[in-house]
Length: 271
Image (cartoon, helix red, strand yellow):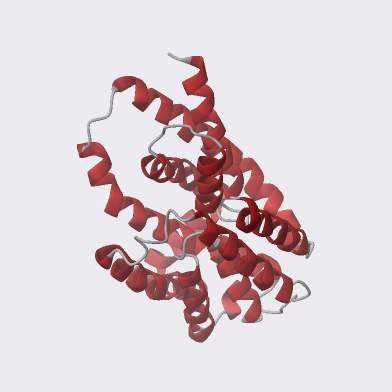
């Protein structure tokens, strides 16, 4: 095992884990690292695999909510008891929120609409400025709606905001949290709903890509590097997401707006 190669994969796992769930775009930051340092790594494959690590971390963080929702969903289907009804509805709102970005994502993937811009680091810079603007605009939003007060219209509109996250360099978590807060959701309600959408969307994206990865010729040692990078991404995602939830609940998204504005400007000017 080459120590320098190992450090490269640890670095990229850390970058993915740190930026996946905060509103700064993990794919954008991986592209920035790619342009700053010649790592000679298959970034597309690594991004997909490390995203799996982040997904595992999110599922662990929200495991109680997920188990509760699953029990309530099937409990209502089998008994029609009123105590399960609100959570049953919430499950369908998650499905509804995934539809807009899911449909647009399929079209983008099949037609390869971002082929000419997805590796353009300047686009990442512009996208970070857009993210900064969105976060700045909702910096003082508080909202009043809890989980069970979300309407179908609210869910659909958050789904529309999630489409922005398909664009190279725009944060998915940022766009959906902004969408939730514009729909009058409480900060933590928007945070939770954002990550309830993340889980099925991430699973769907991985399902589309995993076949190509496992059919590719990848050496055993490279799989070891990938595994270490995935583990690092999972651990860092778990820790950062817990911290990020506190930031959202305290209304401090302006810090991320400033960060995105600074980094976006630097990328446009110097990369």
